Length: 410
Image (cartoon, rainbow, N blue to C red; front, side, top):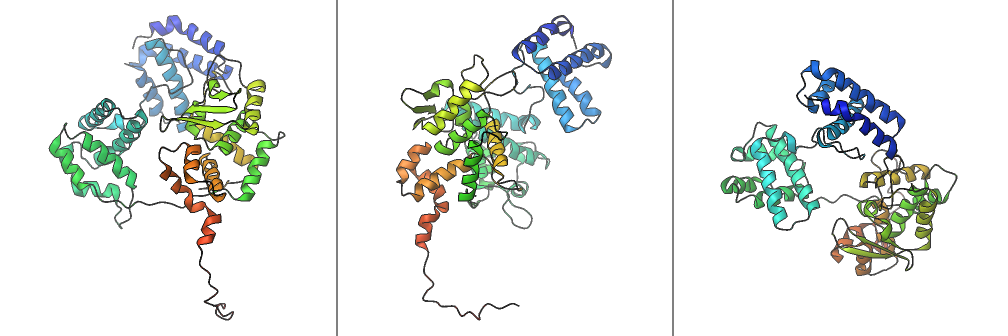
């Protein structure tokens, strides 16, 4: 492993990180990692940076420390081999997910699908979702010593979908992803793909009851976002009010840039990440004031077009997962949904907006337009929580009087 380039140029890396705002602690740890690599490279017999990381795996560091080592070594590798400076994103040192672990034939199947799907003009987000799910499916078969398409049997495939006591393990969508990939890959291996398709079991569509915000929770959330004495940042308040009053998805909030806000016309204009369709919403005073406060009093003064930025350098746009954590912080300050299994993401705000509009007899087509649904039927998901109208469907039990003596203690 040749580290001469790193030895000669690593001061540039340190200088760049200091300039763009990395913390002193992070830079210090990275500098120590560089010095250790330079000192040990000649004697350890490493061939690549993955070998450096595997050294730490071998000495059984905790998962948290391993994650940090992976970030440091990945940043050093990208700079040394490609001249790329850190940007706060995934280092690319060790590939994640099931795909890198697949046997060659299974990886070829995924590669063929991705290539064919792109040629057909399929959305990248859909290709990514389907390929990840099918990679996980193929890895589960691989764990059962099946490494080729022709070796797939019904006996090996069924335990992926159904437990030994007959319980369905995978969703209807999971089966749909596998079916979609196998159909696209039929030209690659017609007999094997068709045989695997014939083994896929019928799966029942299961729809869980959706948690919804109670009136008490709604008041607590609004009070928390308005209470300037709590720990919420102006950024989290702006994101929370945007999500609450517009129902925007986390991915759409993360993708918003400064041009998404038309201050002159009081409008929000975005291109939806899920459907790639444009969406235009009214910019209310409540939302607009929260965003303005963030922009003028807290947003880092950096040349970045993304609306909501990270709060620590290097400053960059927030990801969807970071938007989700903003929802968690708001609910912590509101003192709600702190039990295991409670739904905390901003999608519950989207659900609340939809059910509130339904409860006020707003036509479904209008609600779909506000939420940016591709088809109006999508709003039917929220009907189960439209309590004001569901109560009107209840049957009276007045004709079936129940004696007070019926219910007695056992």
